[in-house]
Length: 171
Length: 112
Image (cartoon, rainbow over all chains, first blue to last red; front, side):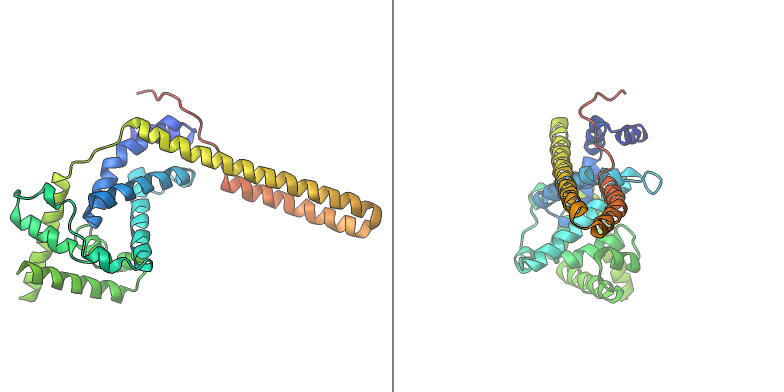
């Protein structure tokens, strides 16, 4: 179905593009919520991802990657850009203190999972992101450094400090 | 010892994110929301193309006016400007076409 829709999109079909976005919305949302741990932020970033995908659809090369892979790459770039923008706007410290805004959905369901999620939410975005990229998605340190545009050494130290903070909170 | 403890933390993180994934209920917007998004973006793209084309026409008219003026005033400058225009116009058109490859067509039903 997806291959058929992509062919239609390349032929200029507005409706096929609409269908492709609708089919991949959930996947992108779930990808982003693991990084943001915030429903509101994940929704905003998904919306931005959809808009950028529509803008850049002519640049999608079906021979290079699957459509979902390309979409995830766009979502990732938008998320990384949002972290940089937050730092520049100096809201970094305020956002560090934000409560996990999806926490109430899971209260009473699994204490140990909630504790870990809460510990992760207390990390800043630029520390939590490399941890998730490495230990959940399996990226190498070099790949993470390229994605986040930071040196490999910085990736290592952020992961180290992040894990240390999570361990301390779980003890 | 520390490595074992780190491995345990990594495992906990992975499990908690899998848990988050399984428990997250996603409210996918209605198809009309996506249709509206696509329509809005395509409309903005078309407006941008129209603006660029208008600027192109104005530039062409200005260059033509200068050429007409130079034709009567100085044949050397006229020829130089002709040569520059002859080379630069195709390049400009090529760059513009690269940035605006094609327009997504309006709503059409997709066969299942």
